[in-house]
Length: 307
Image (cartoon, rainbow, N blue to C red; front, side, top):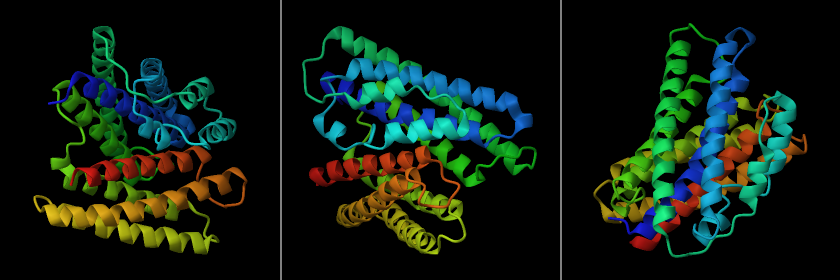
């Protein structure tokens, strides 16, 4: 069971990371709908605003409470997030609250005593986030089913919609564990967590591959190589469950691979911001997948430290 201070810190870190991810999923969905589906665009925008409020509340509760390594990991914001948001807003016309990112960039990590008031506020925040994660997972499911039944067109791949649906369910699962006093990244779950995030990294590689202009042959080949590597790591993590030695091996290999793909994504985002890559990738998507790699790197390092 988690201590009160662990519960508060892990809850805030979970919401800082995932509420932004859900907010950005909403933006990507909204940008992908066509003119006739204005109702779906509005629903996606409503989710964007709801998760923006959750993120703001988490930021207001987090200063001096979250860990320093979570801030240093750049899983909440990176040096490119603000520029990526500005450019994506200009390109899409979808409003993005840049003040939230500026506030998040100023967060300071530390370890302070947790008051009963803070614990109560975090519990309420988690309950609110649970409701919204369940709602957005349901929305993504409906959109996916409509696409798969050929009743809806969107510029987002069906796999991408399934991908972001799984991430919403993961967020919901982690919040549920936290509300039950359980560690959301329990070392006993290492194989399952690594299988989940290795699959996410593999799919990121596939999305990058298929959103590149056909002339970007070198980047296409690099993305293909990463996709194959992470597919293999996903299989290895699934096979390693209940085998400590095998988990240690896949953790080490996953960390090295994720550091490499993080660097690839970061460089790609910066090149997209400089208009030096031909693709259908909006800058915020590049920064988004970079932050998810940063999150996985921090998780892997924590898991390594427990073995």
